[in-house]
Length: 231
Image 1 (cartoon, rainbow, N blue to C red):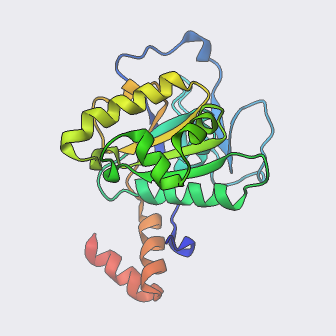
Image 2: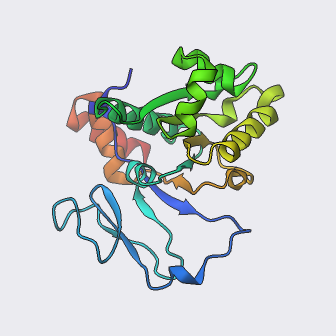
């Protein structure tokens, strides 16, 4: 289970496919992240003013950047989370799913977190197994956006089934345009096939590394010494 006291903010930046041309309509719409929102400049912040999470995007490219959880939470249809091994993709998904589950109320969508490393037959079968709901009943929930799918570790899918798994995810997105699907995988050249925004987790800075070590070591002085030895 996830120990929230040890969860460290992870930063991410939007990745744009080389085949994607940025629309001219985006010019002049520089955006900011204000605490827990990704808002146009003209809209008020939902967090305290002067928050340290406020980041300006590049006005020329309008690339979104900031806290990974904030970026993902504000993608209405879902997104792809990219990163090297051990950068925190799974932890980020676990935390998002946990927060959504805790905030659930009657009629709201609920999270379904699935390890794609367990893919063996079909995506529908895996989702039905993990949710304990028959696919004929689960499918309309997903199609209507009543379930948020967190498909974790596409790169961990068995090699012989990897292409089949990718194809089934793409089909699911096409057949259920109202679905909300998040996918995590290692950095690759084929993430843009899903037609979803993509964000790459950035390497931790010194402050984040210190916070992480302090959370696990429970001795601030010892944690700082370890960090100095690792530098």
